[in-house]
Image (cartoon, rainbow, N blue to C red; front, side, top):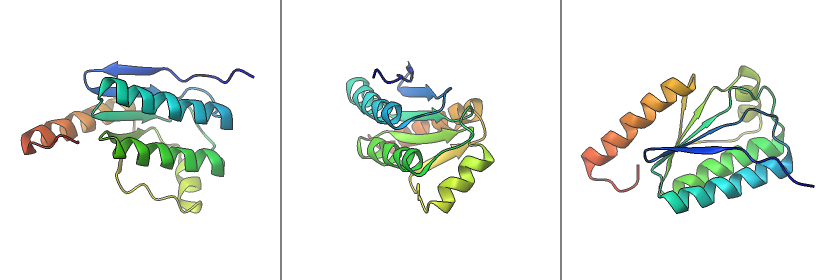
Length: 130
């Protein structure tokens, strides 16, 4: 079965992925692989994952979100999650998933502003990793 691919856009040195469909296990794994490859290929300093259209996650998808954030961070890309619906936030907390290096914003516009500030601060500090 061919799994759905989530588009990943590059804007400057930031990657943006807006997930507009329910993620299933195969599409979540494909997204993780695609995103990590794109971070490596573009040397992106930031990743914004917009979850506005996602209103429910199961334990696998929740863990995959946490893993993607951790792996992106290890590759030097700061992660901002945007558009978390209340049910998704509740599920992530109930699953005990911690996202210590992940920032959140209400929507994509605020996420972009936050990411720009993070990148600017890192450049000011002379930090290669955001």
